[in-house]
Length: 163
Length: 133
Image (cartoon, rainbow over all chains, first blue to last red; front, side, top):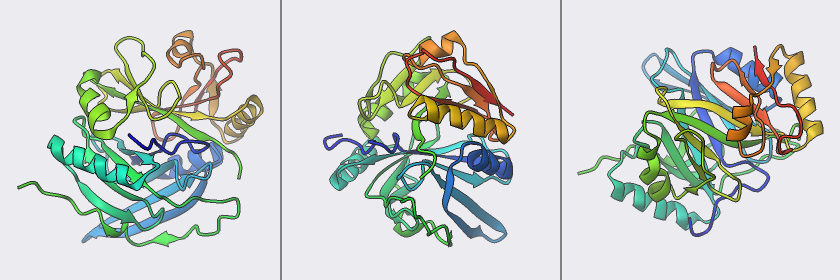
């Protein structure tokens, strides 16, 4: 990646897991590991299908870990890992590589509502996703924006279909 | 902000780690990390030994997460916190110590049902523990 990745003092990125042991996992992450909830997402994906995701920070990165409540055991608990570039254009270049690879792109370029990350998601051959992003906002010691979001993205992130 | 943990690495298990080489290297843009043990392939996005560890196995999923506590005091504080919350720490094995490039991990089974490793980079001088509920 020409401009490198943003990792200094904030870890390599973030990971998001889907779990049926949601309440226990939340307790482990907060009471055990001492991470702090940054905010959370609650929305209806489809009629009768609710999505709940909680985002946790342990350094200035908006979230290093997130947990999604899974209604049943999924084939993979790892939904995605994220790496953040130092330059916005490197996200675009990575998107071009992903497009050229022929791999599925379940989320095209877009901007997340809560962390304001400009990013896209590409499926790995193993099934889990990798998010490549740039420009997320950071959290501070006086973080006071632990609130509910009702949408994943401010814009974009639609699934892309190849011709 | 307490504590200042950092996400150090994630361990992923797939039947053929080399099958993900084009993906991580050419699509995502990571660079090869330190050699892994027993067929594992590692990747990094900075100067750390590894950030993504892909090991051979049947899980086809993440199997552990590594967290860096930063220093010995912070690590001891984290262990105390985990203990107070009801999560028992057990010591990592020599094999795990070797696999983590000088730092001995403390894998533990948290509520996620996945092994979670809390460690810090004291280069193996201190005993390492895993945490189980």
